[in-house]
Length: 589
Image: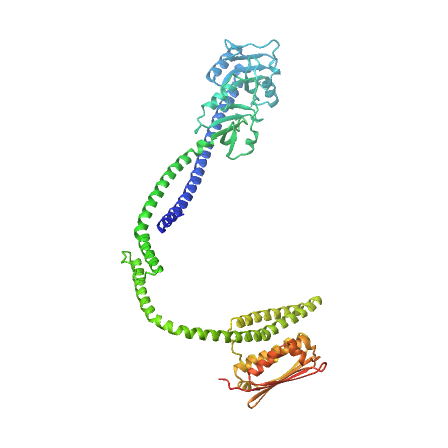
């Protein structure tokens, strides 16, 4: 995609900066959005609290008015003239909300005065046979026997919905009637409209049974004779502020319940108006981010060209000349100290290289033929030697390890069937040990590594313990006789290592083929030679067949011959086997 180091470097810096700026934009947006929603929630809470207080204050004032009137002597005495003046004055004082004040007596008389539709000279007109005792407001007051608010109902003197604040009137303990104060719903809607709501929010006022008293989403229309049911009752289940889609748009919705009336006051604030502040700020942030990225790209391009790409391009050009064979090319003096060090070092190396090439060219030509011939012969001999070494070591070392693993596995299986878990654990440990040693031996064989020196105490432990442990896997008894530690000190490492390999192979053959019950091993050092005897009481074997089939005997003979000794094998079918070794003792240097 990019054809030069400068472009790649500049693009990388800009990409990294873009990622970081992008992350900052996302973080800023999340924080701004969270802040906007939090502020809107606080504002909504204040608006709801204000609306709640206004409704509470209004109905507290109405309750005070009704309570005060019910205690007036003129009303308790049913003094029509005084009642009329008092009722009309209270209605006129609150005519935006209050429609009428009246008294329905216990004997069915109705005394009502008010203003607005349904009144002629402040007096209403009722249908013939009108009895206040049958009206909802009268029955509600009698049932509660205290001040209360009725549910919305249709007025008798006009086709309009409203509620009534009612209170029973008593005189000296005797029931006089029910005092009522009509509150028109249009007045309640007017009260809601007077509440200031920020960010184009809208208020909804609901009854306890989810009927709409006032809804700022609805278009102004003529007074209705029935209340509509709120179409989103599920919103009332969520007490905390939440985001929902209502009336075709998305709003943050919060509601509260007025303790005086039991009405639900719901506030809906357009979600788009809430986050508009965040979106506007994000546009500004993104604009400046783009300007910063453009400025960063320009600065990085200029600096990288002067400090990085121009010196590197010159160095790369000189390297290309040398790659094409132009060894006279040199790097010019650089202004940047680090690149000057590179230039000086490179030029010095080139000079040294030219001088060395001249000196070595003649030597190379002279020695090439000699080396080629020597290498051919050396490779041929090493291949033969390596084949013999690998074959012998694989057979002696890995053969013994694999035999031990196989026998341990067999013993472990039998022990597991008998639920002899300590023995199973012991056999698994031996398998693990032989596996690890086998891997180590294989690495040494394949990598042609020198075997670590065998200490005398390790050799004695091998003869006395390790062989006994291997033979014990097949319940064979073992007896050994070896020289003292001082006598064994006369043996060199080559002899010790070969003795270990020979004995390992003899034990492996015994375990695999002999079916013996007992094994004896004896080692003696007689002046300048070592005499070793290995015998078992197994089934013996045919030596001719053994040499053809292997049994590791050719390997044993090879090692004995390598040490300058000889071996005598005495065996018959069913008569066991006996190996007698004589090996000269070399002084350990």
